[in-house]
Amino acid sequence: MSHYHQVAEVLIDIEAEMRQIGCWDAIAPAPQALRSEQPFAVDTLSFAQWLQFIFIPKMHFLVAEQQALPNACGIAPMAQEYFRGQQLPVAGLLSALVRMDELLGGNR
Image (cartoon, rainbow, N blue to C red):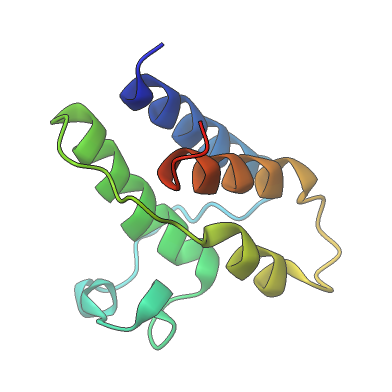
């Protein structure tokens, strides 16, 4: 299985897990919120919004165009911190994000 295919599968898993736990927004944030230059757009978006509206679309684009993928990723620790204490069943989402970190960090 190609590296692009593996990344695409994990992106699907991330979206499915987000939908399952109710962290998938039906309405996109304002365009200016998507232009943040801060890591994870912490100044304009929640972490879940960043995943949905910035990370997932960008990664789908890179996969579809077979462009260079990031060679390092650290999403899982940010997710663990964001979801800490929220009482949501996030084990599946965290697992998918760990796998994405592994795929983009070279631990295939």
